[in-house]
Length: 87
Image (cartoon, rainbow, N blue to C red):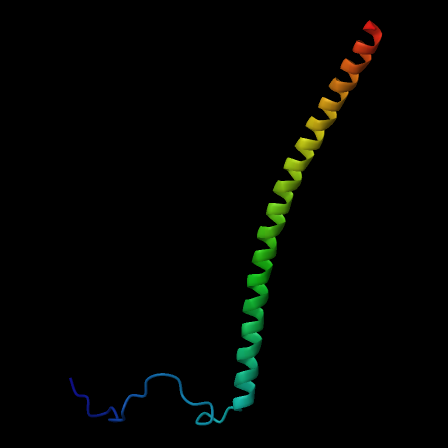
């Protein structure tokens, strides 16, 4: 196998500098900022989803307690009426 046809240029590893590629450094920074904002928004959305799930869970518990309190209040009212009738 003959490797003479390949140019012996040093391999360049990593990311080329934006100035080397002719790209505008400001554009790269703006893009990175936008990506960070999008990442933050997605994280906040996930946090809000978790909070919403917790609120819904707590609301179900509150509804159960309210229902139980209403039942107890009816029981107390009935007992009060029965006690009043006995006197």
